[in-house]
Length: 289
Ligand SMILES: [Zn+2]
Image (cartoon, rainbow, N blue to C red; front, side, top):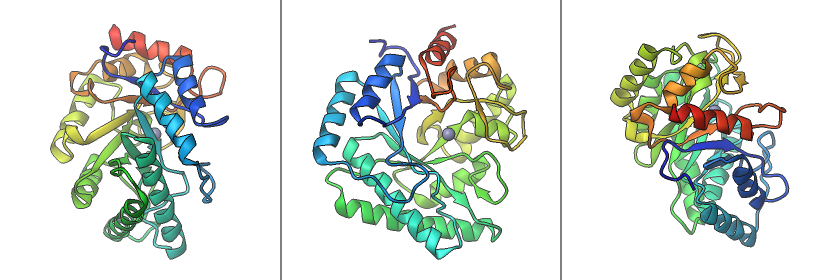
């Protein structure tokens, strides 16, 4: 085990073939943390796992010493002004939180969503209501405490909430305890944060410390970017193959403020099947050099 090395290098993994396959895949590629969807990310209807399936999954994660993160489905829009979408989003978030509690996850990552042209304040109200209801629904059914909810930085799409660290700070303060953030290197870069440069990274982390608090940074999505700084395009590249580059990614992995924050890749992989051994090895080399 390389548990003494920091930070942890993890990967978003497929759940196909059964939940325990996640642990098998993590070990195969050398991932030290895992992230999964609780159900198919482009369908509202959740998949239901039995208690036996969940128990053996938990056991496999424990024996592999692999911390788990859950990523809510893509359809969720907590800020939606549309009642139907809002209601479905509440249910999907409740399901993700409950799944997180059942699997012993360290956090449930979610995109906040879009206010669809209303305004930030209305989107904020909708988000607060959605999270409150989802937490209450999940807590009713959960035998274990709910994991923290981690709001992910957006790639800067117009009307989206969480485009800036300031917006994430407002959301986290309003949502209170058991709420944190997830930063995504590709999203930050797309939204115009020059994290590929030393000064840009320092400024970002100072802002996170002031607006959110570094202790509330629960996980860092480690993705290179296929598009240039500020392009507003969310397309992930393999580590070192994009515009953030080896140096930029390496600086993130070696930053002393981030050594306790798990990194999770959401990248195409060299063969196009998702995070792979080659990218995990690249990250491990960057972490050490
Ligand atoms: Zn991400």
